[in-house]
Length: 603
Image (cartoon, rainbow, N blue to C red; front, side, top):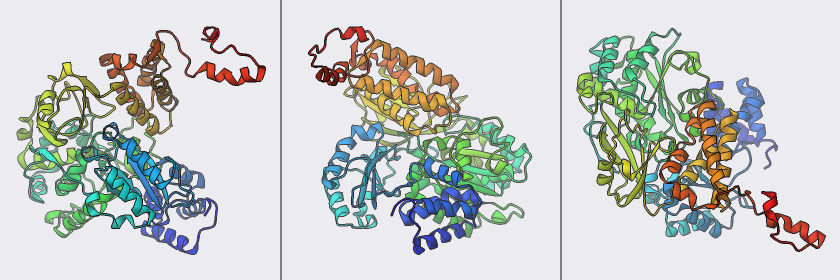
Protein backbone atom coordinates (compact mmCIF):
# COMPACT_ATOMS: atom_id res chain seq x y z
CA UNK A 1 0.00 0.00 0.00
CA UNK A 2 1.38 3.42 -0.95
CA UNK A 3 1.15 6.49 1.27
CA UNK A 4 -1.81 7.83 -0.75
CA UNK A 5 -3.76 4.62 -1.40
CA UNK A 6 -7.34 4.62 -0.09
CA UNK A 7 -7.85 3.03 3.29
CA UNK A 8 -9.43 -0.41 3.43
CA UNK A 9 -12.82 -0.78 5.08
CA UNK A 10 -11.11 -2.47 8.03
CA UNK A 11 -8.66 0.41 8.44
CA UNK A 12 -11.49 2.95 8.30
CA UNK A 13 -13.31 1.00 11.00
CA UNK A 14 -10.15 0.88 13.15
CA UNK A 15 -9.62 4.62 12.79
CA UNK A 16 -13.22 5.43 13.67
CA UNK A 17 -13.00 3.18 16.72
CA UNK A 18 -9.91 5.02 17.97
CA UNK A 19 -11.52 8.42 17.35
CA UNK A 20 -14.65 7.40 19.26
CA UNK A 21 -12.58 6.03 22.12
CA UNK A 22 -11.12 9.51 22.58
CA UNK A 23 -14.40 11.35 22.05
CA UNK A 24 -13.08 13.07 18.90
CA UNK A 25 -10.96 15.25 21.19
CA UNK A 26 -8.28 17.13 19.21
CA UNK A 27 -6.11 17.32 22.31
CA UNK A 28 -5.78 13.52 22.15
CA UNK A 29 -4.24 13.63 18.66
CA UNK A 30 -0.93 12.03 19.68
CA UNK A 31 -2.78 9.19 21.38
CA UNK A 32 -5.12 8.72 18.42
CA UNK A 33 -2.21 8.48 15.97
CA UNK A 34 -0.30 6.16 18.29
CA UNK A 35 -3.19 3.77 18.77
CA UNK A 36 -4.17 3.67 15.10
CA UNK A 37 -0.57 3.00 14.08
CA UNK A 38 -0.39 0.18 16.64
CA UNK A 39 -3.05 -1.75 14.69
CA UNK A 40 -2.31 -0.51 11.15
CA UNK A 41 1.49 -0.45 11.30
CA UNK A 42 1.97 3.07 9.94
CA UNK A 43 0.09 6.32 9.18
CA UNK A 44 -1.10 6.63 5.54
CA UNK A 45 -2.01 10.10 4.31
CA UNK A 46 -5.72 9.23 3.88
CA UNK A 47 -5.82 8.27 7.57
CA UNK A 48 -4.25 11.61 8.49
CA UNK A 49 -6.75 13.41 6.27
CA UNK A 50 -9.72 11.63 7.87
CA UNK A 51 -8.31 12.28 11.33
CA UNK A 52 -7.97 15.99 10.58
CA UNK A 53 -11.56 16.19 9.33
CA UNK A 54 -12.93 14.28 12.34
CA UNK A 55 -11.10 16.48 14.84
CA UNK A 56 -11.68 19.81 13.11
CA UNK A 57 -7.97 20.28 12.45
CA UNK A 58 -6.05 21.15 9.30
CA UNK A 59 -4.25 18.39 7.45
CA UNK A 60 -1.05 20.42 7.81
CA UNK A 61 -1.39 20.32 11.62
CA UNK A 62 -1.97 16.55 11.72
CA UNK A 63 0.85 15.86 9.26
CA UNK A 64 3.11 18.14 11.26
CA UNK A 65 2.45 16.16 14.42
CA UNK A 66 2.88 12.83 12.63
CA UNK A 67 6.20 13.99 11.23
CA UNK A 68 7.54 15.32 14.52
CA UNK A 69 7.71 12.18 16.64
CA UNK A 70 10.24 9.54 15.66
CA UNK A 71 7.95 6.61 16.57
CA UNK A 72 5.38 7.70 13.99
CA UNK A 73 5.75 6.45 10.40
CA UNK A 74 4.16 8.16 7.41
CA UNK A 75 5.66 5.60 5.01
CA UNK A 76 5.35 1.79 5.16
CA UNK A 77 7.82 0.13 7.54
CA UNK A 78 8.66 -3.44 8.35
CA UNK A 79 6.15 -5.68 10.08
CA UNK A 80 9.01 -6.19 12.55
CA UNK A 81 10.61 -2.87 13.48
CA UNK A 82 13.80 -3.48 15.46
CA UNK A 83 15.32 -0.41 17.13
CA UNK A 84 18.70 -0.83 18.82
CA UNK A 85 19.42 1.52 21.68
CA UNK A 86 22.25 3.80 20.56
CA UNK A 87 23.37 5.27 23.87
CA UNK A 88 27.13 5.25 24.45
CA UNK A 89 26.82 2.53 27.11
CA UNK A 90 25.08 0.24 24.59
CA UNK A 91 27.86 0.94 22.11
CA UNK A 92 30.40 0.04 24.77
CA UNK A 93 28.65 -3.34 25.03
CA UNK A 94 28.85 -3.94 21.29
CA UNK A 95 25.48 -2.74 19.99
CA UNK A 96 26.89 -1.61 16.63
CA UNK A 97 28.32 -5.05 15.86
CA UNK A 98 25.10 -6.74 16.96
CA UNK A 99 23.04 -4.47 14.69
CA UNK A 100 25.30 -5.26 11.72
CA UNK A 101 25.07 -8.97 12.55
CA UNK A 102 21.25 -8.91 12.52
CA UNK A 103 21.20 -6.89 9.31
CA UNK A 104 23.49 -9.45 7.70
CA UNK A 105 21.38 -12.40 8.81
CA UNK A 106 18.16 -10.78 7.57
CA UNK A 107 19.74 -9.26 4.46
CA UNK A 108 18.50 -5.75 5.11
CA UNK A 109 20.43 -2.47 5.24
CA UNK A 110 20.32 -0.34 8.41
CA UNK A 111 17.61 2.34 8.36
CA UNK A 112 15.91 0.56 5.45
CA UNK A 113 12.86 -1.68 5.07
CA UNK A 114 13.45 -5.03 3.40
CA UNK A 115 11.92 -5.34 -0.05
CA UNK A 116 9.32 -7.85 1.12
CA UNK A 117 8.22 -5.47 3.91
CA UNK A 118 8.97 -8.00 6.64
CA UNK A 119 11.58 -6.16 8.68
CA UNK A 120 13.35 -2.85 9.20
CA UNK A 121 16.31 -2.31 11.53
CA UNK A 122 17.50 1.02 12.89
CA UNK A 123 18.74 2.78 16.01
CA UNK A 124 16.96 4.91 18.57
CA UNK A 125 18.10 7.05 21.46
CA UNK A 126 18.58 5.62 24.95
CA UNK A 127 15.79 3.20 25.90
CA UNK A 128 16.26 3.51 29.67
CA UNK A 129 17.79 0.04 29.95
CA UNK A 130 21.46 0.98 30.30
CA UNK A 131 21.93 -1.34 33.29
CA UNK A 132 20.95 -4.39 31.22
CA UNK A 133 22.01 -3.58 27.70
CA UNK A 134 22.57 -4.04 24.90
CA UNK A 135 18.84 -3.39 24.52
CA UNK A 136 16.36 -3.04 21.69
CA UNK A 137 12.69 -2.23 21.07
CA UNK A 138 10.48 -4.39 18.87
CA UNK A 139 7.63 -2.46 17.24
CA UNK A 140 8.16 0.35 19.78
CA UNK A 141 6.54 -1.49 22.69
CA UNK A 142 8.34 -4.76 23.41
CA UNK A 143 11.77 -4.52 25.02
CA UNK A 144 14.61 -6.98 24.50
CA UNK A 145 17.43 -6.85 27.05
CA UNK A 146 20.94 -8.31 27.28
CA UNK A 147 21.36 -8.92 23.57
CA UNK A 148 24.24 -11.14 22.47
CA UNK A 149 25.18 -12.95 19.21
CA UNK A 150 23.17 -16.04 20.20
CA UNK A 151 19.98 -14.04 20.79
CA UNK A 152 20.55 -12.12 17.58
CA UNK A 153 20.72 -15.39 15.61
CA UNK A 154 17.52 -16.64 17.25
CA UNK A 155 15.79 -13.30 16.60
CA UNK A 156 16.64 -13.57 12.91
CA UNK A 157 15.10 -17.05 12.72
CA UNK A 158 11.95 -15.96 14.57
CA UNK A 159 11.50 -12.99 12.27
CA UNK A 160 12.07 -15.04 9.11
CA UNK A 161 9.46 -17.56 10.33
CA UNK A 162 7.14 -14.63 11.22
CA UNK A 163 6.69 -15.70 14.83
CA UNK A 164 4.78 -12.87 16.61
CA UNK A 165 7.07 -10.92 18.92
CA UNK A 166 4.70 -11.59 21.82
CA UNK A 167 5.59 -15.29 21.47
CA UNK A 168 9.34 -14.81 21.68
CA UNK A 169 11.12 -16.19 24.79
CA UNK A 170 9.78 -14.27 27.80
CA UNK A 171 13.21 -14.06 29.44
CA UNK A 172 14.36 -11.84 26.56
CA UNK A 173 11.96 -9.15 27.77
CA UNK A 174 12.84 -9.48 31.44
CA UNK A 175 13.64 -6.10 32.97
CA UNK A 176 15.22 -6.27 36.42
CA UNK A 177 14.95 -3.40 38.89
CA UNK A 178 18.53 -3.94 40.14
CA UNK A 179 18.18 -1.83 43.27
CA UNK A 180 21.70 -1.91 44.71
CA UNK A 181 21.49 0.76 47.43
CA UNK A 182 18.19 1.78 49.03
CA UNK A 183 17.47 4.67 51.35
CA UNK A 184 14.20 6.57 51.90
CA UNK A 185 12.49 6.43 48.49
CA UNK A 186 13.60 2.89 47.67
CA UNK A 187 13.08 1.53 51.17
CA UNK A 188 9.92 0.70 53.09
CA UNK A 189 6.96 2.46 51.47
CA UNK A 190 4.00 4.08 53.27
CA UNK A 191 0.83 2.02 53.08
CA UNK A 192 -1.48 3.10 50.22
CA UNK A 193 -3.54 6.02 51.48
CA UNK A 194 -1.26 6.89 54.39
CA UNK A 195 0.16 9.95 52.66
CA UNK A 196 -3.29 11.16 51.58
CA UNK A 197 -4.64 10.70 55.11
CA UNK A 198 -1.75 12.72 56.52
CA UNK A 199 -2.36 15.49 53.98
CA UNK A 200 -6.10 15.54 54.62
CA UNK A 201 -5.44 15.91 58.34
CA UNK A 202 -3.99 19.30 57.42
CA UNK A 203 -5.49 22.05 55.32
CA UNK A 204 -3.99 22.44 51.83
CA UNK A 205 -2.03 25.52 52.90
CA UNK A 206 -0.62 23.65 55.89
CA UNK A 207 0.54 20.88 53.55
CA UNK A 208 2.22 23.47 51.34
CA UNK A 209 3.90 25.08 54.33
CA UNK A 210 5.23 21.71 55.45
CA UNK A 211 6.54 21.04 51.95
CA UNK A 212 8.37 24.37 52.06
CA UNK A 213 9.93 23.44 55.41
CA UNK A 214 11.23 20.24 53.82
CA UNK A 215 13.12 22.33 51.23
CA UNK A 216 12.34 19.65 48.65
CA UNK A 217 13.68 20.56 45.23
CA UNK A 218 12.56 19.01 41.95
CA UNK A 219 14.38 15.80 41.01
CA UNK A 220 14.06 16.26 37.26
CA UNK A 221 17.25 18.32 36.95
CA UNK A 222 16.29 22.00 37.35
CA UNK A 223 15.97 21.74 41.13
CA UNK A 224 13.21 24.30 41.59
CA UNK A 225 11.67 24.44 45.08
CA UNK A 226 8.61 22.18 44.98
CA UNK A 227 6.68 23.97 47.71
CA UNK A 228 7.14 27.32 46.02
CA UNK A 229 6.04 25.92 42.65
CA UNK A 230 2.89 24.43 44.13
CA UNK A 231 2.09 27.64 46.02
CA UNK A 232 2.36 29.66 42.81
CA UNK A 233 0.07 27.19 41.07
CA UNK A 234 -2.49 27.24 43.89
CA UNK A 235 -2.53 31.05 43.90
CA UNK A 236 -2.89 31.32 40.11
CA UNK A 237 -6.33 32.18 38.78
CA UNK A 238 -7.92 29.66 36.44
CA UNK A 239 -11.06 27.69 35.66
CA UNK A 240 -9.22 24.49 36.58
CA UNK A 241 -5.88 23.42 38.00
CA UNK A 242 -3.89 20.41 36.76
CA UNK A 243 -1.23 18.06 38.12
CA UNK A 244 1.17 16.61 35.54
CA UNK A 245 3.74 13.88 36.15
CA UNK A 246 6.73 14.07 33.84
CA UNK A 247 7.60 10.40 33.24
CA UNK A 248 9.38 11.19 29.97
CA UNK A 249 12.73 9.94 31.24
CA UNK A 250 14.69 10.53 28.05
CA UNK A 251 18.10 11.70 29.29
CA UNK A 252 20.61 9.08 28.07
CA UNK A 253 21.92 7.02 30.96
CA UNK A 254 18.89 7.65 33.18
CA UNK A 255 16.56 4.82 34.24
CA UNK A 256 15.65 5.54 37.88
CA UNK A 257 12.07 6.52 37.01
CA UNK A 258 11.65 3.20 35.22
CA UNK A 259 12.21 1.44 38.55
CA UNK A 260 9.92 3.80 40.48
CA UNK A 261 7.18 3.31 37.89
CA UNK A 262 7.62 -0.45 38.03
CA UNK A 263 7.86 -1.00 41.77
CA UNK A 264 6.46 2.10 43.51
CA UNK A 265 3.53 3.23 41.36
CA UNK A 266 1.31 3.61 44.45
CA UNK A 267 3.78 6.00 46.08
CA UNK A 268 3.96 8.02 42.87
CA UNK A 269 0.19 8.26 42.36
CA UNK A 270 -0.21 9.11 46.03
CA UNK A 271 2.18 12.03 45.60
CA UNK A 272 0.18 13.29 42.62
CA UNK A 273 -3.02 13.06 44.69
CA UNK A 274 -1.42 15.03 47.54
CA UNK A 275 -0.44 17.64 44.96
CA UNK A 276 -4.07 17.80 43.81
CA UNK A 277 -5.22 18.39 47.40
CA UNK A 278 -2.60 21.10 47.85
CA UNK A 279 -3.28 23.11 44.69
CA UNK A 280 -6.99 22.37 44.17
CA UNK A 281 -6.79 20.14 41.09
CA UNK A 282 -9.43 17.74 39.83
CA UNK A 283 -7.44 16.04 37.10
CA UNK A 284 -3.92 14.69 36.75
CA UNK A 285 -2.01 13.46 33.73
CA UNK A 286 1.04 11.24 33.50
CA UNK A 287 3.23 11.69 30.42
CA UNK A 288 4.83 8.26 29.97
CA UNK A 289 7.73 8.13 27.52
CA UNK A 290 7.11 6.03 24.42
CA UNK A 291 10.02 3.73 25.24
CA UNK A 292 8.20 2.75 28.45
CA UNK A 293 5.02 1.73 26.62
CA UNK A 294 5.40 -1.78 28.10
CA UNK A 295 4.65 -0.28 31.54
CA UNK A 296 1.26 1.12 30.48
CA UNK A 297 -0.94 -1.83 31.47
CA UNK A 298 0.61 -2.30 34.94
CA UNK A 299 0.25 1.42 35.62
CA UNK A 300 -3.36 1.42 34.48
CA UNK A 301 -3.99 -1.57 36.75
CA UNK A 302 -2.54 0.39 39.69
CA UNK A 303 -4.87 3.30 38.92
CA UNK A 304 -7.86 0.96 38.74
CA UNK A 305 -6.92 -0.59 42.08
CA UNK A 306 -6.63 2.82 43.70
CA UNK A 307 -10.06 3.83 42.40
CA UNK A 308 -11.53 0.70 43.98
CA UNK A 309 -9.80 1.57 47.27
CA UNK A 310 -11.27 5.07 47.30
CA UNK A 311 -7.86 6.66 46.71
CA UNK A 312 -8.87 8.15 43.34
CA UNK A 313 -12.18 9.38 41.99
CA UNK A 314 -14.95 11.19 43.87
CA UNK A 315 -14.73 12.04 47.59
CA UNK A 316 -11.28 10.50 48.11
CA UNK A 317 -11.05 8.80 51.50
CA UNK A 318 -14.54 10.10 52.25
CA UNK A 319 -13.53 13.76 51.95
CA UNK A 320 -16.51 15.49 50.35
CA UNK A 321 -15.46 17.67 47.42
CA UNK A 322 -12.02 16.11 47.09
CA UNK A 323 -12.39 14.65 43.61
CA UNK A 324 -9.32 13.74 41.60
CA UNK A 325 -8.36 11.22 38.93
CA UNK A 326 -5.36 10.48 36.72
CA UNK A 327 -5.03 9.56 33.03
CA UNK A 328 -1.93 8.35 31.21
CA UNK A 329 -0.65 9.87 27.97
CA UNK A 330 2.02 7.82 26.13
CA UNK A 331 4.68 9.74 24.21
CA UNK A 332 5.86 8.84 20.73
CA UNK A 333 9.61 9.31 20.92
CA UNK A 334 10.83 12.87 21.41
CA UNK A 335 13.54 13.74 23.95
CA UNK A 336 12.59 17.42 23.89
CA UNK A 337 9.23 16.55 25.49
CA UNK A 338 11.11 16.13 28.76
CA UNK A 339 11.05 19.94 28.88
CA UNK A 340 7.85 20.80 30.74
CA UNK A 341 6.31 23.22 28.25
CA UNK A 342 7.09 20.90 25.30
CA UNK A 343 5.49 18.09 27.29
CA UNK A 344 2.34 20.19 27.74
CA UNK A 345 2.26 20.93 24.01
CA UNK A 346 2.34 17.18 23.36
CA UNK A 347 -0.41 16.58 25.91
CA UNK A 348 -2.52 19.06 23.94
CA UNK A 349 -2.03 17.10 20.71
CA UNK A 350 0.68 19.26 19.16
CA UNK A 351 4.31 19.03 18.14
CA UNK A 352 6.51 19.00 21.23
CA UNK A 353 8.06 22.43 20.69
CA UNK A 354 9.00 24.27 23.93
CA UNK A 355 7.02 27.40 24.65
CA UNK A 356 8.39 30.87 25.20
CA UNK A 357 8.42 31.55 28.95
CA UNK A 358 7.04 33.46 30.80
CA UNK A 359 4.23 32.74 31.30
CA UNK A 360 5.24 29.58 33.16
CA UNK A 361 3.04 26.47 33.42
CA UNK A 362 2.07 27.27 37.03
CA UNK A 363 0.08 30.20 35.58
CA UNK A 364 -0.58 29.13 31.98
CA UNK A 365 -0.05 25.41 31.48
CA UNK A 366 -2.22 22.57 30.21
CA UNK A 367 -5.17 24.00 28.22
CA UNK A 368 -4.04 27.45 29.37
CA UNK A 369 -4.78 26.66 33.02
CA UNK A 370 -2.50 26.68 36.11
CA UNK A 371 -0.48 23.46 36.03
CA UNK A 372 2.25 21.98 38.19
CA UNK A 373 4.65 19.65 36.36
CA UNK A 374 6.89 17.47 38.50
CA UNK A 375 9.19 14.51 38.03
CA UNK A 376 8.37 10.92 39.09
CA UNK A 377 10.96 10.95 41.87
CA UNK A 378 9.66 14.28 43.18
CA UNK A 379 6.10 12.97 43.61
CA UNK A 380 7.44 9.86 45.38
CA UNK A 381 9.35 12.10 47.79
CA UNK A 382 6.18 14.11 48.51
CA UNK A 383 4.39 10.99 49.79
CA UNK A 384 7.19 10.29 52.27
CA UNK A 385 7.21 13.93 53.38
CA UNK A 386 3.44 13.92 53.92
CA UNK A 387 3.78 10.92 56.24
CA UNK A 388 6.98 11.89 58.10
CA UNK A 389 6.71 15.72 57.87
CA UNK A 390 8.97 18.34 56.34
CA UNK A 391 11.36 18.76 59.26
CA UNK A 392 12.28 15.07 59.03
CA UNK A 393 13.14 15.40 55.33
CA UNK A 394 15.12 18.61 55.88
CA UNK A 395 17.46 16.80 58.28
CA UNK A 396 18.59 14.46 55.46
CA UNK A 397 21.22 15.59 52.97
CA UNK A 398 22.70 19.09 53.03
CA UNK A 399 21.32 22.49 53.95
CA UNK A 400 20.68 23.47 50.33
CA UNK A 401 20.00 19.97 48.99
CA UNK A 402 17.73 18.13 51.38
CA UNK A 403 16.71 14.49 51.21
CA UNK A 404 18.06 11.73 49.00
CA UNK A 405 18.83 11.33 45.30
CA UNK A 406 18.47 8.20 43.19
CA UNK A 407 21.25 7.49 40.68
CA UNK A 408 21.11 5.36 37.52
CA UNK A 409 24.59 3.81 37.44
CA UNK A 410 25.82 2.21 34.21
CA UNK A 411 28.96 1.78 32.13
CA UNK A 412 32.28 0.35 33.28
CA UNK A 413 31.35 -1.07 36.68
CA UNK A 414 30.68 -4.49 38.18
CA UNK A 415 27.25 -3.67 39.60
CA UNK A 416 25.19 -1.36 37.38
CA UNK A 417 21.77 -0.46 38.69
CA UNK A 418 19.94 1.91 41.01
CA UNK A 419 21.64 3.59 43.98
CA UNK A 420 20.04 5.99 46.46
CA UNK A 421 22.14 8.25 48.70
CA UNK A 422 21.58 11.37 50.79
CA UNK A 423 22.63 14.53 48.99
CA UNK A 424 26.22 15.37 49.83
CA UNK A 425 27.57 11.90 49.00
CA UNK A 426 31.00 11.80 47.35
CA UNK A 427 31.22 10.77 43.71
CA UNK A 428 34.04 8.44 44.75
CA UNK A 429 31.75 6.65 47.22
CA UNK A 430 29.32 5.78 44.42
CA UNK A 431 32.20 4.49 42.29
CA UNK A 432 33.39 2.30 45.15
CA UNK A 433 29.94 0.88 45.79
CA UNK A 434 29.22 0.04 42.13
CA UNK A 435 32.58 -1.72 41.68
CA UNK A 436 34.16 0.72 39.24
CA UNK A 437 37.84 0.16 38.51
CA UNK A 438 40.49 2.33 36.85
CA UNK A 439 37.89 5.03 36.19
CA UNK A 440 38.94 8.03 34.10
CA UNK A 441 35.60 9.86 33.89
CA UNK A 442 32.00 9.96 35.09
CA UNK A 443 29.22 11.67 33.16
CA UNK A 444 26.79 12.92 35.81
CA UNK A 445 23.28 14.00 34.84
CA UNK A 446 23.40 12.66 31.30
CA UNK A 447 24.86 14.37 28.22
CA UNK A 448 23.49 17.76 29.31
CA UNK A 449 25.12 17.34 32.73
CA UNK A 450 28.76 17.50 33.77
CA UNK A 451 31.71 15.25 32.94
CA UNK A 452 34.06 14.70 35.89
CA UNK A 453 37.68 13.56 35.66
CA UNK A 454 39.47 11.42 38.25
CA UNK A 455 40.75 14.60 39.91
CA UNK A 456 37.15 15.48 40.85
CA UNK A 457 35.91 12.28 42.45
CA UNK A 458 35.95 13.90 45.89
CA UNK A 459 33.25 16.32 44.77
CA UNK A 460 29.76 15.76 46.15
CA UNK A 461 26.35 15.19 44.59
CA UNK A 462 24.26 18.25 45.49
CA UNK A 463 22.71 21.27 43.85
CA UNK A 464 25.52 23.42 45.23
CA UNK A 465 28.32 21.20 43.85
CA UNK A 466 27.47 18.50 41.29
CA UNK A 467 23.76 18.64 40.38
CA UNK A 468 22.20 15.72 38.56
CA UNK A 469 18.97 14.49 36.99
CA UNK A 470 19.99 10.95 37.90
CA UNK A 471 22.38 9.54 35.28
CA UNK A 472 25.79 8.31 36.42
CA UNK A 473 27.75 6.83 33.48
CA UNK A 474 31.18 5.39 34.28
CA UNK A 475 34.09 5.27 31.79
CA UNK A 476 37.34 3.46 32.53
CA UNK A 477 40.71 4.32 30.98
CA UNK A 478 40.14 2.07 27.97
CA UNK A 479 37.45 4.44 26.67
CA UNK A 480 38.00 7.22 24.15
CA UNK A 481 36.34 10.29 25.66
CA UNK A 482 36.27 11.89 22.21
CA UNK A 483 33.99 9.07 21.07
CA UNK A 484 31.81 9.58 24.13
CA UNK A 485 31.39 13.27 23.28
CA UNK A 486 30.80 12.46 19.59
CA UNK A 487 27.99 10.07 20.51
CA UNK A 488 26.37 12.78 22.63
CA UNK A 489 26.77 15.30 19.79
CA UNK A 490 24.88 13.01 17.43
CA UNK A 491 22.20 12.52 20.08
CA UNK A 492 21.52 16.25 20.45
CA UNK A 493 21.47 16.83 16.68
CA UNK A 494 19.00 13.96 16.28
CA UNK A 495 16.75 15.18 19.11
CA UNK A 496 16.64 18.90 18.28
CA UNK A 497 13.03 19.91 17.63
CA UNK A 498 14.25 22.16 14.81
CA UNK A 499 12.30 25.21 15.99
CA UNK A 500 15.22 27.62 16.42
CA UNK A 501 18.11 28.10 14.04
CA UNK A 502 20.93 28.18 16.63
CA UNK A 503 20.00 24.69 17.84
CA UNK A 504 18.87 23.18 14.53
CA UNK A 505 21.97 24.35 12.65
CA UNK A 506 24.38 24.50 15.59
CA UNK A 507 23.97 20.88 16.65
CA UNK A 508 24.48 19.75 13.06
CA UNK A 509 27.63 21.87 12.72
CA UNK A 510 28.99 20.31 15.91
CA UNK A 511 28.36 16.84 14.46
CA UNK A 512 30.14 17.77 11.23
CA UNK A 513 33.17 19.06 13.14
CA UNK A 514 33.31 15.95 15.33
CA UNK A 515 32.91 13.64 12.34
CA UNK A 516 35.66 15.53 10.52
CA UNK A 517 37.98 14.89 13.46
CA UNK A 518 36.93 11.23 13.45
CA UNK A 519 37.85 10.90 9.77
CA UNK A 520 41.35 12.18 10.46
CA UNK A 521 41.03 15.63 8.90
CA UNK A 522 41.12 17.58 12.15
CA UNK A 523 43.22 20.52 13.20
CA UNK A 524 43.50 22.78 16.22
CA UNK A 525 41.33 25.24 14.28
CA UNK A 526 38.47 22.73 14.41
CA UNK A 527 38.65 22.57 18.19
CA UNK A 528 38.43 26.37 18.28
CA UNK A 529 35.36 26.21 16.04
CA UNK A 530 33.75 23.85 18.55
CA UNK A 531 34.43 26.36 21.33
CA UNK A 532 32.80 29.12 19.29
CA UNK A 533 29.74 26.98 18.56
CA UNK A 534 29.39 26.26 22.26
CA UNK A 535 29.40 29.97 23.11
CA UNK A 536 26.88 30.75 20.38
CA UNK A 537 24.44 27.98 21.27
CA UNK A 538 24.66 28.48 25.02
CA UNK A 539 23.23 31.96 24.82
CA UNK A 540 21.04 31.94 21.73
CA UNK A 541 18.87 28.81 21.67
CA UNK A 542 15.12 28.70 22.34
CA UNK A 543 15.29 26.12 25.14
CA UNK A 544 17.69 24.19 27.32
CA UNK A 545 18.34 21.42 24.78
CA UNK A 546 20.50 23.62 22.58
CA UNK A 547 22.00 25.46 25.53
CA UNK A 548 23.21 22.19 27.07
CA UNK A 549 24.12 20.40 23.85
CA UNK A 550 27.78 21.38 24.08
CA UNK A 551 28.22 20.67 27.79
CA UNK A 552 29.94 17.29 27.27
CA UNK A 553 31.98 18.80 24.45
CA UNK A 554 33.23 21.64 26.65
CA UNK A 555 34.07 19.33 29.55
CA UNK A 556 35.85 16.68 27.51
CA UNK A 557 37.96 19.20 25.57
CA UNK A 558 39.01 20.87 28.82
CA UNK A 559 39.68 17.68 30.79
CA UNK A 560 40.60 15.11 28.13
CA UNK A 561 42.17 17.20 25.38
CA UNK A 562 44.64 14.44 24.31
CA UNK A 563 41.60 12.40 23.24
CA UNK A 564 40.88 15.14 20.69
CA UNK A 565 44.49 15.81 19.72
CA UNK A 566 45.06 12.21 18.66
CA UNK A 567 42.55 12.88 15.86
CA UNK A 568 44.37 15.99 14.61
CA UNK A 569 46.12 15.83 11.25
CA UNK A 570 47.74 19.23 11.51
CA UNK A 571 48.03 22.26 13.74
CA UNK A 572 46.81 24.32 10.81
CA UNK A 573 43.57 24.30 8.85
CA UNK A 574 42.74 21.03 7.12
CA UNK A 575 39.91 20.65 4.62
CA UNK A 576 37.14 18.30 5.65
CA UNK A 577 37.64 16.07 2.59
CA UNK A 578 40.41 14.43 0.53
CA UNK A 579 41.22 17.16 -1.99
CA UNK A 580 43.52 14.95 -4.02
CA UNK A 581 40.75 12.39 -4.48
CA UNK A 582 38.24 15.12 -5.35
CA UNK A 583 40.55 16.36 -8.15
CA UNK A 584 41.28 12.89 -9.53
CA UNK A 585 38.29 12.88 -11.88
CA UNK A 586 39.34 16.24 -13.37
CA UNK A 587 42.92 14.96 -13.86
CA UNK A 588 41.65 11.92 -15.69
CA UNK A 589 39.49 14.09 -17.93
CA UNK A 590 42.40 16.41 -18.78
CA UNK A 591 45.12 13.77 -18.92
CA UNK A 592 47.12 15.48 -16.18
CA UNK A 593 49.25 13.55 -13.69
CA UNK A 594 50.11 16.00 -10.91
CA UNK A 595 48.64 14.09 -7.97
CA UNK A 596 49.31 15.81 -4.67
CA UNK A 597 51.20 18.72 -6.21
CA UNK A 598 50.86 22.19 -4.72
CA UNK A 599 47.68 21.33 -2.80
CA UNK A 600 48.74 23.71 -0.06
CA UNK A 601 47.61 26.53 -2.35
CA UNK A 602 44.02 25.39 -1.87
CA UNK A 603 44.10 25.49 1.95
